[in-house]
Length: 128
Image (cartoon, rainbow, N blue to C red):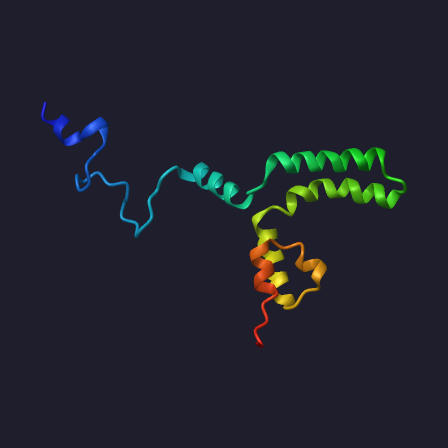
């Protein structure tokens, strides 16, 4: 009987009912445990376009194996395959942005590699 009214609609507990997800921590909820934290960290740091990156990686492997004319080009193409994944990780993206911003006034060819908003920021003339 009486417990159903406190449970709320569809098994949801109303706010202030005393069964909060917080257990004495300031502003943090403990949901999911260690595996969920690992999953969130991987999703955040491995924000990779998997379809295109896998295709590009396989193309590097194919052309490295069959299309390398000398040992340097073959090695370069084969080592570029895992780099397709590595350069899309969050720490590498942050490091590349920091590098571009510390250069100050990059040459036009490097500026063209950036997305349009970053191009506008980097090409802005602060001197007037």
